[in-house]
Image (tube, rainbow over all chains, first blue to last red; front, side, top):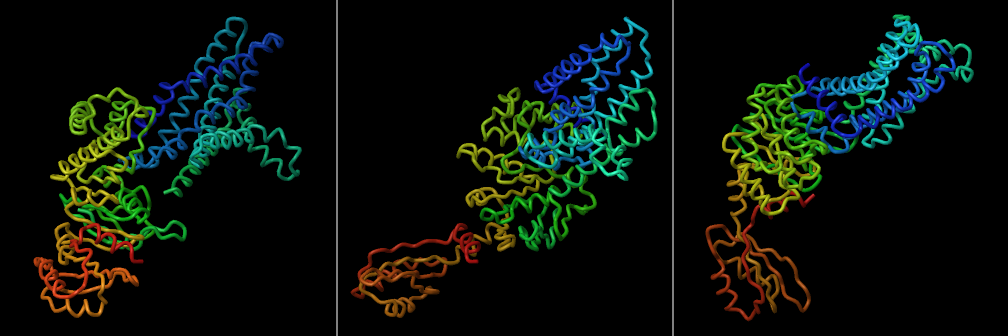
Length: 234
Length: 312
């Protein structure tokens, strides 16, 4: 476990020492802030629903940008060989990097606490959906980080890793809005695959075990896929 | 210390390492020698647990590689070829990170990093980013990485490749210094490196071991024969052979080359200890052959290496 923390710490330090973290977080805040507040006053409702509606799409872009380097860079430089021959297991490396990604997502979400606080001054804000929304955002972020790690393990090229991760995250976000493309009997299954659908459930403040199971499965499949791919490379 | 048995590695259908077995004793500096693509790096990668062998066993001390990989990793320090370090870190941060992963506690960390800085000559670059370092400095940081935990076994993959002669001499000095107490395995395709640093040498070619012996033995077996090279005009091989075969100490006579109207090149193999140049010269003087080239060469490690790795 200590090794996991050390690896996670190193990855986080890499993000925050280099400009990556600041660029990604500023863009995230700009995009979500702009789209949220341009329509906020029209609706005249004290809630964060529009903010959370947008999150899956923004995350589909931003999280792949954060995770693309995690394995690709190591494979490309060759430092993965030095890391893996230190007394660490692959599980330590995988969990460390995953945790670093999740903490990064959390760090990006923290400044947005300003929105609910600001809204609470202006009207009656219901805190339940806000708490649910943030929990959902973290789960959604963690799932996308797992997907991003998987994409990053596939290739040495960070750009390919980014595009693959974005494509998967995008599909997961939008698939339940494209149901008319699929034949009737599949609708239930495909609808269940939609990340946005599960996220919106939690964001309403309803914490249902089905949604938790969904996100846990995406995380598990992503991490296990990464494990298999990296096993294959050695 | 290390026992390798019937180790093989296939990449799909390509066989990179084919059924190799050898032992390494404690306190030995072993040179793994071979031409490019012989399977040196693959062997070392399997030894460090980076690659899984297709078949065969590796035993380090009492640990089996596929069962106690973590314990084995703790015993080993490994420097991959060309030392691929994290580019975006500072040298100190990198060493600190490695020390952490090696499980050194805070006080030990600092004192060990100090020691390594002295040993590898890093004191002026501690605050520099790894991406700015020259190849030689990068290699030295890599060496510090490998030696962080004072490991019992040090595995170095082409530690001097791409360095200038001064840096090579320095790295060799460091390796010999470490080799006094530790077990060192180093791979290289540079022969003088093996001659300068290793106790024992394993020569690999096309994934197979073609020689495995102590340096002195190899040299001795090599030194057993001198060769005298002769280029003679106005002679035919038959005559030359008949005449020179009579000399005591001549083991074999071989025709290298004969051109019409040109010289006849002959190689005379002689037993060691005896210098036959004078006798051969006297013999030739009695004939009317014209001697245009006459020199002796001793088989060195290089010739052995070429013989062992070229024929197939």
